[in-house]
Length: 214
Image (tube, rainbow, N blue to C red):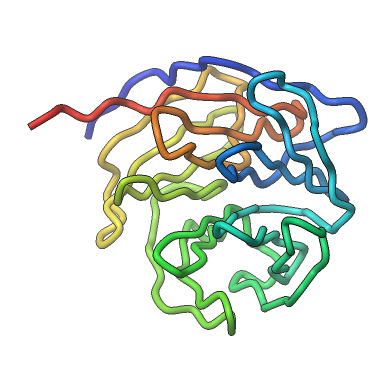
């Protein structure tokens, strides 16, 4: 297992009126984060909030190219990103113990925090299609280039780790500085992860390690 210190390349926030950052996602233009009763879109160039949607937003956030998905207590809401309207809801697999949320390959991937699990979920019905076991509490979840990464947060320690999607084995780990938490997690599809900062009320950009060329 490869292990290294996380390289924080930028911090966004804290933001006025935001006490806690939960889920995080990226739509190719804005970084979205959940703050309890709102979804907020941050311009990653200026670091300012460009737009907010009034919606229950208690945990993970995801984007499928058109819709935002947002965990609200024991359900997952499908939201029209253009209008902010909630179009549908499905049950969350953890029944309220859910954390991270990601979209990949036509499915939602839902972290179940204290159960140390990641569920692949049918976005139309909420049916659990398969479950991956992790060795740590699961916060944010993201897929990038076929790699499954998730955030952890236990006590005063957090990291971002890449796991084998078949076995749950840890393949790579990026350690955040002590006291620096990871709530939500999303990749920009390139060399950055966006990490929610929990009760710090901010979002951090962390460098994704480069892969060796073959």
